[in-house]
Length: 151
Length: 151
DNA sequence: CTGACTGCAAATAGTTTGCATGACG
DNA sequence: CGTCATGCAAACTATTTGCAGTCAG
Image (tube, rainbow over all chains, first blue to last red; front, side, top):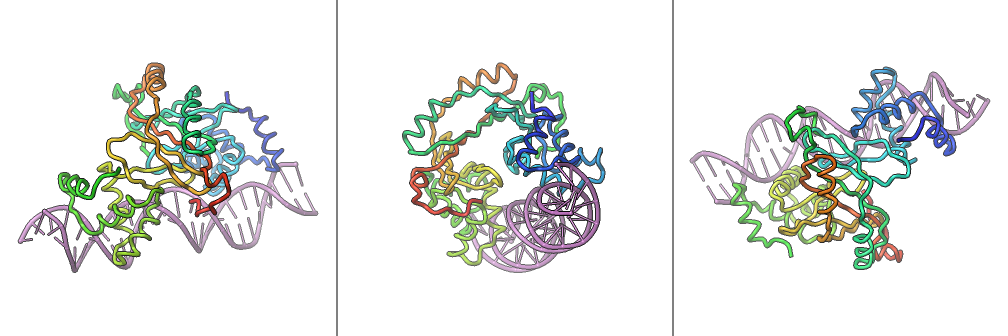
């Protein structure tokens, strides 16, 4: 499960951020979607329900949420910057369908051996990693879905 | 080692692309650098030696080279699109220093177990993966290097 | 009340496109 | 020579910034 609204409100407040209807709306959209969303897509959806909200606010909200670690970026090749709800305390990765853009999460990667070896060999202090698999999802393999805007 | 100039020329020719001084210059810059380079950075360097070359040409050349698989993209968080010389036939990954932007390659990741399990569980047809570790390189740990433009 | 937040418009950055000229093969 | 490549300017898209009014705490 993702964070609850209350939990999120509390995190925001503790960090000195205010809780505004706009921020609630953006978070709500992101948490309802299981796909990754571009800022523009988020704006569109939020705008349907709150027509007075501006794209700029969406960008600013995304910055704040990303800084707090409540959402995270997905890099899906080419242009990037899509956002996805962050599951609390879970280290996780993505499986991205190159046809329809669907994103699946998985959490259990065991990269620690590789990480340790690399650290030893390269003298890097390794802080994190990004692991994404790309391919075609179940439905696209069957040719069931039509393509979404790839981006 | 990377591709030789001859090898590259032959690949271009076989695919119906012409070999122009501009393309040579761009390739040369990329192959000389061990860092990843943004299109703008490549342009700057190329421009020093060939002042008449345009940024547009750099973009177009990068497209061609990427399509041929001679160079590859690096996603280093935030804005992306940096390019790096591709080592021939090597499946490889990056270790990126978040302080100075240095990129190290490594080739031996064993993700096949994970990949098979994911394919089984999610019914994805997995085509490829992107694996990047981030951290601080040897020199930055020691505080030796000053930061480059992070970008 | 007051500082943080919002929305608008305008500025910027990055990338792509149209078109006439030039050069590889 | 014909075709593809180049260079310029202009068009676009995505994102950021400045500023005055507004609102959460």
